[in-house]
Length: 145
Image (tube, rainbow, N blue to C red; front, side, top):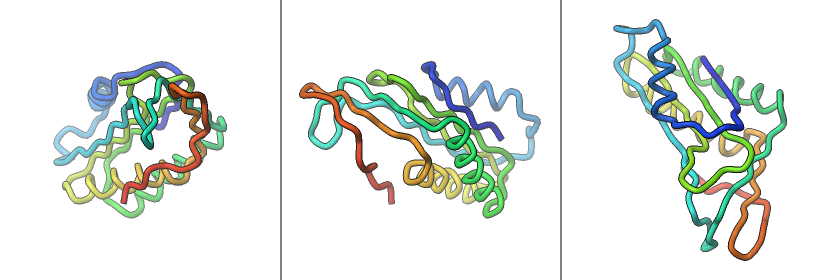
């Protein structure tokens, strides 16, 4: 398992491949599920120019670890990767990567989705959007279910 909060931009697909290259699970996994969240240029009918994500160091990672440990207990997972950006994020940059590996697709699909939804709904991240008309803190996330 790897959980990292990063200030630097990353390519989620390259990071997933780098991580997989280091794993020693060849032949064990039959399914990989991943979610990549990317910065878009709109939200709730507003044109967004950038996003600043803040977090509580230590507490946020602990919360994400609790989410992942719960998923590992519920599904038969071989490994989990979470990367999350903080700081100022530009349009089209990757914000979050959640990837799960398992022997079967059901465990991979379900766990990846639940991890992502729990991350969005409960992990201590705060978003500030810069728009063409000003700056505002985001009060709620878009529901995924």
